[in-house]
Image (cartoon, rainbow, N blue to C red; front, top):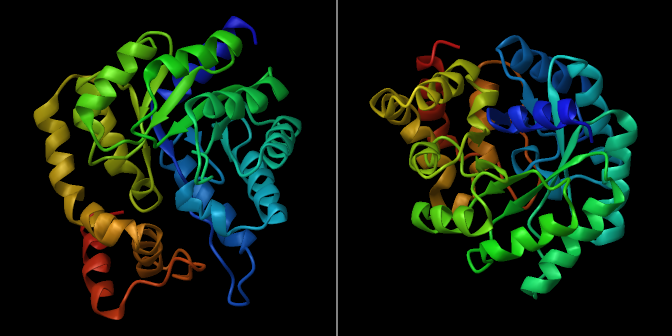
Length: 303
């Protein structure tokens, strides 16, 4: 990876890292036309980093063929307008195949989902990510860290072996733990992305993050961009005004262990006539009694 490519990818992570939804057609298949339209809406709204096959995209509910299709649609629609960070995961051979497919299709980076295996050792975590990173040395690699017990030294160990590990999506809901983890791993060595979106972005930025992920951005790109502009300027009062603006929406997404995380986003998009509200099990459509509140929030953002 040359220095120009490296800096382009690092800059893309120090931004609003959008996690697009995956819209479904009435027959339950992937709605390709709606998917392209939603991607164009993000790009036209000023978003420059896209993560196909993220959790807001229902990664674990898609088939391998659908995940490949989502990658291809995103790369094709974005063209030169955005940097593409493809979500990969599951068993090592599946993750490696997905990473190589992303490379072949023209993506610049992959995000490695936190392993969902019930028995994850620290050394095994390093081995898992190393196998994936070594399979695509030309791509930037971004571990998605949700394990509160993983020490920063293990990330440093991984990067020592794989210099293409350039960023971290950190999604442990503890700003103090994040601050310690980042410093133990090497604060300046990686681009730190606040992986719990707008609600945690101000506190994580205060500890060294320079980008944040967002599912809300599907609904209101300008709102997410307003927050990162404030954070880049060090204007935390302005960032917290945006935080207040999105608070209820994000509370609905986080309720009951994030049971309706994607459903709330798709409900907002449905209220705007942009895609169907359908989600796949183990998610569920938002209960009818909550739909009006979500629609009111979305309409209030003047999107």
